[in-house]
Image (cartoon, one colour):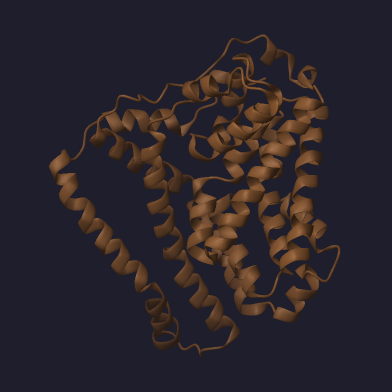
Length: 362
């Protein structure tokens, strides 16, 4: 079994980067509004620029399959990256006020249901990535956080995070983002509560039970404001460096769907009128490995082609919360029976959400 100290997370690197100096506060106060204005100017001109390149500079006709696919790719690539930078920077500054130790302290001693709700909410705003799944799990369990409460945190953190909500809001609107947040948190709470009631503490790997609480370097909650700004920027560099390739793959797939997949075909496969569209969406999503930044352009394309909202959200949730690589990571600390229970409970929650949305919104 791989030693826990070999499992690194970007949070420590961000903390060190924030301490290494940078622009003075007065320079930041001057540059911040200029940067925000430039961001908005570029963002509002992305669509005309993409259309100009595709249909003026390139010999492609508007309405053609290849032309629409190229225009989608040229428009969505800078749009997703710009939204990602804005969202990650803002939430990175907020995250500088939290540490894994502080999060554990808030969850220790809470009753099952109250702890599940609090853990799911904390999962949205506290530092978490797949590389930190194992150390956080160990730290929570050995600190006395109930197993079910820990799972609520581990489900909510990757599935209902700032990247998912920010990009959904920017690409498909606030209603879908709000629905996704509400249902994702509900799944995290319900799944964690169910696992807690099943009392499966005996299905954690033995080596975990023998460890003391382990945590990485804590985020210094006494940072100065310039240091928090640098922490937020370090988060942008670290996260964008990890996800850019998935963004490009996801946008390329979304462009192919947008340009070449007929609406009637998508309606037959993932429409609300087919009972098997939701299970199919979950089955298709599990083998994929992506994150919110990479999968949301695909979600945008699917909705634009007539896929049902419930089926599309079920696909997105299964990619983020149930991907096989994530299960391999968690296998370091969980025995097979607990892994299987986790998959089944979360999958049932996703199916219920998918069918509910298809029945109500069509």
